[in-house]
Length: 304
Image (cartoon, rainbow, N blue to C red):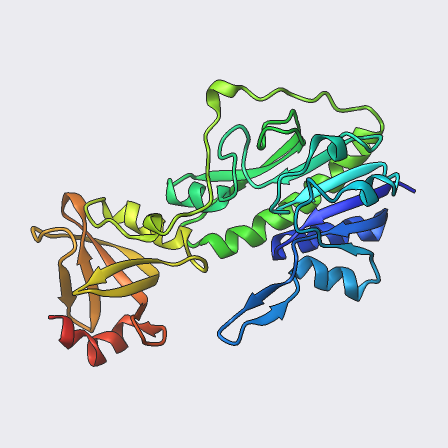
């Protein structure tokens, strides 16, 4: 039976690990170290570790995989599979298995290399994104591509729903790809470096909404960052996080960023080019998440 080392960390990775464990011999699971979570700083294992422990799999949690890899090489695995692991892996380990190391990346490479491809695809207003299975190399997400699948992004999707869609798409594509790889039926395709774009991890500055952009752009920004890290704007010095919004067929002559109250307790905001966006679910500083209606009836007065 094919012996596999799996590397992954978040919930995105769990269906992929589950499928591998059901068909092959997973000789080790490598994931990030436990982290303190929440107000009480509770030490919490990663979703991948939780699955691995529940199913009796051997778990490794190196602080720095580039320095702590000898035990993994000694397992004599046939293949390494990674999916949102979160650390750079050294070339010596990547090239040690018979069939090397492959990665499930949530974009259609060479577009959106990096750690936030799903967020960026939604924020950019893409109609489609997808999953690429590629060889892992020292350069980030630059290895030869073995297989891809396209996945549609609907207006009703946010980052959370796309994580779920792409996780299942990655699982299915991987299970289709591994037998073809082992049988030598895949011709890897080199990525066109001239087409490469990048989706680096999100900075604090990127979470701030820019109402000078059109309502469509702001709408995409909001859903791209829901459920994490959540986009926001400032209103009289307070942060207002925005979880959900809706496009409306209205225009305004008000300056971008102006709060517009609408009949039936609807909260609108002026955006670029005279467009208008409706805010649906928000969280003012120091408050719980609430509907726009509750905000209008309770806390909006202080900002007007």
